[in-house]
Length: 368
Image (cartoon, rainbow, N blue to C red; front, side, top):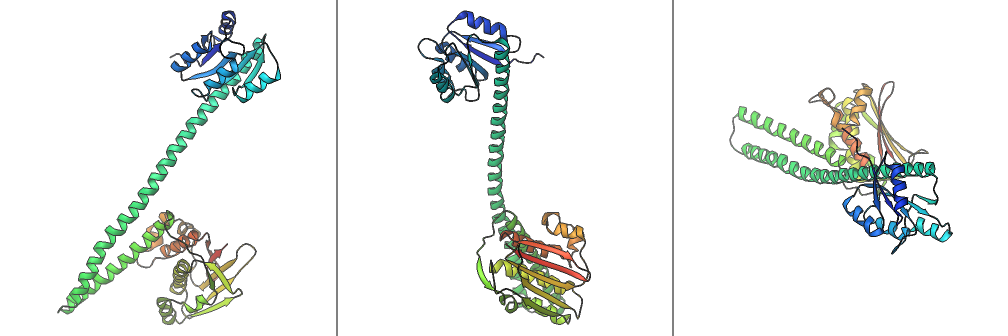
């Protein structure tokens, strides 16, 4: 199959010049000829893919510069070359500013120079065309992303409703059942239904929280919080876990206050601290340090003594949608809690780091 030649439009009121240009370019280009600007516009109307225009400057009715300027409207990507026997600076400036020419060549032209210039002009046309196509692809991709982002928001609303509504119904009727006369076996069944439903509700809340964070739907409100706020807001479940395992929480702080989202940070801090007590050794000390360094305005570090976390698991914790059953570990789990911490830190433009020490694990909240 023969490859189509790129189109080259030559405009000159001298037919001999047009014939000379045709002989020069016919092997490589499909040469279109026009003896006037009016004829050239007719050709352009029927050929949207003209790659290069070579126009004489001195023509009747309108000049080459005027013709090239008007051709920009219909063929913005086409490369333009102006031929003229005059070299006055005003016409050069007009050609560059108005006609957006690629090159200005004086008559009589040098065949090699004109050929090379035209080939370069064609290469420029190809690049501009490719750039335009890439921009259109990017615009399409951006529109698709916007549509996808809107779909994510709608999905969040739908899932929130469709999952939580039946859960609410199950918990409500389980509560009603408990108010009736039940046998011991029925009470056991009802308690298990309630416990499993509450566990499922917590899982749904956690997953939705991670998804909301990943799609940017968690609002952030920064406040100045005193460092002792953390010591005064120990969650009841954390306190119970510490008491049951005979652990001790030790606080150390070298800064007075931190700028953060109080609610999001409290959720993350509570989860990390609860993990530290759950996986920390019995009768051990859990250290909470609050300080700053040259790179961060505030750092909250939670150290526990206990089993280490593999680097593979730490990597997956930072990418919640890569979590697998080995990390979730069914009822025990530890990946999802830290994944939520990571999500809540990213919302605040902060960082979560998890590192192993010789005898335990350190979790860092780093605020810029």
